[in-house]
Amino acid sequence: MSRGWVRLQAVAVSGSVAEGLMLAVLPWIAATITSDPRQLSLVNVVGQSPWLLFSLFAGVLIDRVRRSTVLASAYAVQGCAALALAVAGVTDALSLPLLVVVAFVVTSAQVLGDGATGTLVPEVVEPERLSRANTRLIVIDRGVVQFVVPPAAGFLVAYGLGTPAWVACAAAVVAVALVPGLRSAPVTPSVKHPLRDIADGLKFLIATRLLLSITVAVALGSFAASASMSMFVLYVKEVLGLGSVGYGVMLACGAAGWVASSFVVGRIVDRIGYAWSMRLAQVGMVAGQVLIAVLPPWAWSIGVVWFVMSAIVMVWNVCSQSSRQRFTPPALLGRVLTGHRALAWGLTPFGALAGGFVAAGFGLRAVWVMATLIQVGALAVTWRGLSTRAFREAEQTAAAR
Image (cartoon, rainbow, N blue to C red; front, side):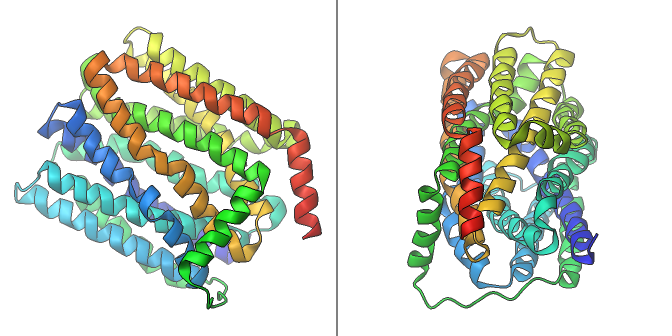
């Protein structure tokens, strides 16, 4: 195990604590200000928009600037956003416009941080260990840390709405302090116009049929997930009848699914391969959306579904990220990773907006019906484009490059 890999994990833990606290507390604070689904969706719409607005340019920056420097800058920005929210909580200055701005800044930092982390993994981990390394980072980002963070955020809110933000600010400072010990390879300066660099990354992503199929499937799934997650806080409050701690526990059920899946995802992928792992994961995601739409409002049953769905999504995400790292030249990796997120996660603001209007017009359960129909589209793309043959051809092309 290299020192670089150990250091990268330490940075990820600190950064994910900061990010997890902010993402957990923002919807809850917004729900204390308004119960209008459309206004709540606005926080999610603006908060998710950097994936569409900045991802492509973030990729150029990641491929032109030393990646550890980009990572430190991202956590510094995140810390400033947390500090602003913390001060507002102490001074009773919390408002919906402020939450919208903070959500935008936090996600902008996440765009840079996630992209830089994804490009650093192949620098510190051998190619044959990529799937396990990505599993570990996903567990850190969405599992172990968020298993602790959402319930903790619920308890911290009891001491003041801005309290979680103070803790998030401290965690971001720790992450920034750890990054200088993470050595990353120097990048080759580019003399091309940034738009030409962006075009090169998108051209490779679109021309590589397997990666394009993954991106289309993720785009549909992200739209569906954003629509449902934007309304999840209201679903927990109004349908399940839970408070802030209960909301945190429900989020933790999802995080626990990530943790549980991490112990077996490597063996699943090794046993049945990338193609069938991703196909079956999509089947599970469709089934999960259906269950949330039709099950009675029993918190324990929804928690179980959330747990299983998260475990399934873990399998998909590990295969998805590892595929881009395996089949993309290092010089293009930053642009391909962020290009994928721009095209795939760029739909999340529209998903959040759709979730708010569907909930306002047809009720909260209708959001999960809509999400199910869209997820079926993602399943169709996956079944057609991610065959065993498609992965074999991608491996042959990468080996010949």
